[in-house]
Image (cartoon, rainbow, N blue to C red; front, side, top):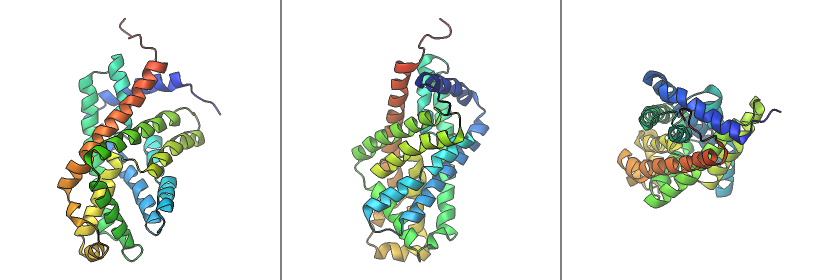
Length: 275
């Protein structure tokens, strides 16, 4: 199996960042929607399987084994994921792209990810997917959402740092191999690790938390959610944004940028092209 060196994957991503930074906004937005839905589908399959388990350790293990399918699809299909694009800071520091181009990519892709993930959550909650287990999947989804929205702000921020450090490691590791099987394994291991550890990923939470909010809004499930003793007071978009999405997003940026900077200073040729 051919293996790319750390230097090659670092400089390769910097080169790819130029295309990401200059792509038409419409293309970035559509690819962002696609990535949001694909990450959301990873959350769907992991939630569906884990909702039938009572043991907390098994819930994390099963989720960890299944959730990585989302990022595998994202990378293999070339869609645009905000958290992975945190690595574009390397190209900005090197001078290959401007900081304005970096922010443009982040904003467009972030909004696209949000649209794709939230749309998928609505489709799952209102069109029968959460009927699985006689509505137990809806209860599980609401419980996960309430738990995430109840995290202290600083906890959500730190968990976001560790999460995206692993996601960006997965992006790099997926590029170490030139074969599909090697790429899949490179992506799988770090993503399984972050899920098992319970770290926080902003795009995944764009599915997980709205799914719980929508489950509680659906009259078919709201009674079951209330009977389960879930704190439904936090199941609203205002709490989602302020208590989870903002700190997790900031943590994800820090975690991804730290990995990118480490790889850049350790492996990249830092001599700018115009020198």
